[in-house]
Amino acid sequence: MQVFLAKHAGFCFGVKRAVKIATRSSKLHREVNTLGDIIHNPQVVDDLKLKGIIPVNSLEQCGKNPVIIRSHGVSSQVYKELQELGVEVIDATCPFVLKAQKQVKKADDRGYQVFIYGDADHPEVLSLCSFAEKRPAIVFSHPSELTDRVQPKSAVISQTTKDLAGFKEAICKLVEECSELLVFNTICTATEIRQRHTVNLAKEVDLILIIGGKNSSNTKMLAKLSSPYAETYHIETAEELQKDWFTGKEKIGISAGASTPDNIIVATYNKIIDWFGDLPKAANVADIPVH
Ligand code: SF4
Image (spheres, rainbow, N blue to C red):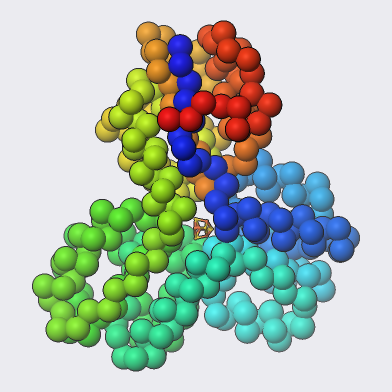
């Protein structure tokens, strides 16, 4: 059996940065709060809890603790409330999300109806919506939802982790109806690269494991994109692996969402090697063959 890791898999720049900021702040404060989980990976969130980085659901639960804003960002309203509370704010919003927030504001200020290609209840989308203060942004999760909602002067932007194919389809639909269309391609390159390499790997293997939080939208998207090409399993940790999945399979692929840490990827690889391989185990991701 051969096991390959996708060329680009696991922690992206924004998530690495957020975890680094959180770890650093844990050394300076007894307890720091995050509004919601700092990233969509329960294992990383649990590790950080041990260091005093505690997720809360509302500002009332923070008391006077410093507050970390997670990589997905928060609404403009939350920024205002934090300022009023006078607590220390440690902003770990990914710079790509910050840029998208500014673009929503710019388009809204200039009189465009903002459309957001994304999942309506995703924290990043909720944050983006809040920056359209003049007229409510319209969120759509599939281009087919755009019917009858297009305004002559529109702007379209994407949640950073959505797929390029769907975004392109939405642009084509909008352009037919608008006299003026402003397009901001905010799909993050880390997302696009992970999607492309996952699909390439899925085309070459019999089975692919997509590792990442069950609540991680970019991980779910990787699993969705790989499933037409190879038998696909979305797992959070190596503990979920089942031996019978691998029966009759020769080539196994592994990919991982942008919020999946290296140690979980390595543990997954090593468990497969333990069961079926005759190769040495990996000490870190660099030891895993890539495809
Ligand atoms: S996926 Fe992209 S936008 Fe999202 S946190 Fe990572 S680098 Fe930032």
